[in-house]
Amino acid sequence: MNALAPAMPNSLWAATAPPPPPTRPLAGGARTDVAVVGAGFTGLLAALHLAEAGIACTVLEAAEIG
Image (cartoon, rainbow, N blue to C red; front, side, top):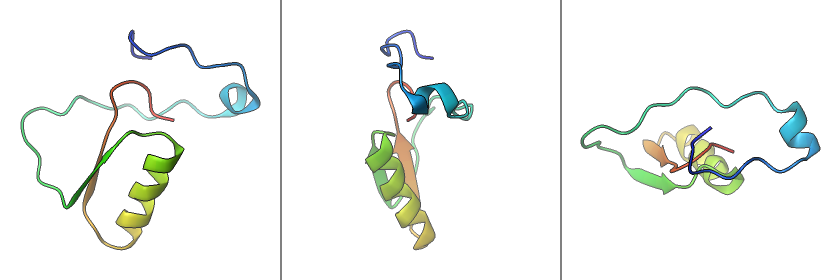
């Protein structure tokens, strides 16, 4: 977990969800059709729909995914 991110609240989801995948900081520039800012439910769902439609997208998150 990112040191700047608040602790995950107590919930069934937090207790049962698998850990997020390992990620790395964006280094340098990147080319993409759509940049999704925020990897919460809405941002990840938007990215999923874009990817399924064949649109290159990059998800940017400052703290923890989910």
